[in-house]
View 1 (tube, rainbow, N blue to C red):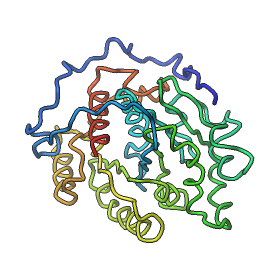
View 2: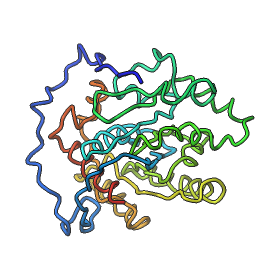
View 3: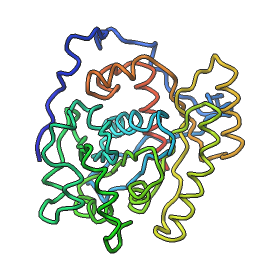
Length: 307
């Protein structure tokens, strides 16, 4: 397993020092108070300590619409889970390699990626997994080569189970495996859903994003019926929420009305900190640990563990 170097891609860009970032006192979330969803917050227990790791719970971070915060949520949820003692593997399952970029690795410089594990029998998953700068957070990287896998897998027997077979050897090494899916409902995304125990759906608080969720839910139902009976929706995460705008609040209300209890109490607000973390090549929990965004992802991690 190789070690991911701290990114140098942010050099020369103006980014506020991490130590100066503080969006206020880190107050505990109180059950019963009204949260961003407009309903009373539920009681979320303190995550229990773990004395051993594995088998991993596999979550597909999925939405066929781009730009809704899938990659941001994968990175920051993964980092927040490690703060509660969990070992986490992040799987970049998008040929654009955005997850790898967000952790400071240029995808075009990679010699071996998840593509090689999927297609070449001589390459094992442990040969490709990389350590990140966050303790207990590992990365299975990707680049544009993965786009060829969708074509090459078409003729494979059991092609929808290719990712499941890839991850099987490391399931006992981790507590959570988070798969960052590409913004489509093609074979790669079906592979992710087939390998997953649950689906986390980031949903931008915007009308067109809400309209597309029905198609994703239909795909999830088909995968559950035909390929993966254990698949369930872990939760819907409202992202890019701006409580100052009526539109964001109206979309949030419609999401809660439509999906009820599966909507997380946590919502991720718009903030300039998230683009900065991409440049820095690290999660917001280490780049701006006292920011509102870091606090939100820690609260989301608590909810995910509780579910």
